[in-house]
Every structure is written in C-alpha cells, then in structure tokens.
Length: 85
Image (tube, rainbow, N blue to C red; front, side, top):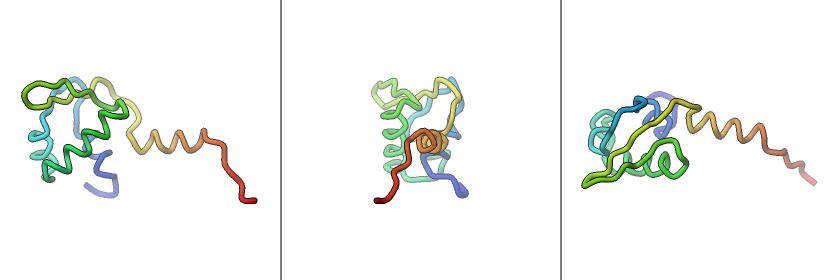
C-alpha cells in the first residue's frame, strides 16, 4: 500500500457509485476484516463514504473529492498557527 495511510488507500480503492461489503474490501486490500471495518467506520463518520446498511453493511462512495489526508492538509493550512509564548 506504499506510503499512503491505510484509510487513504482504502478510500482510493473504492470506485464512485460502486457498492462494497467489508469482506469485499478485505479481499481487495488483503488486510484483516477488522482493520477494514475500522477504516470504513472512519470514512463513514467523516462523510467520505456512506453505509447503506443491510444484513451485511454495504458501503458506497458517492463522489470523488480530496482524500482524507488531503482534507487534513487543507484544514491545517486554514487553521491559525499558534505561536509559543
């Protein structure tokens, strides 16, 4: 998965408009399902993807946008810097 964070890699693997179960993504990423579920929870909590529910959770990426790490960088540039006193 290179130097990207797991969450960024997971998000990047998901195609816009496609539906994924945690099992699908665990197979695609070759990571334990538990790790994938933690990543999906983060992406869902912060609005990067949607959990459509069902007997087994189904996740959907509705649109392309900045990756989670790009959002952090954007927010850091907008945040006023604190100076040491």
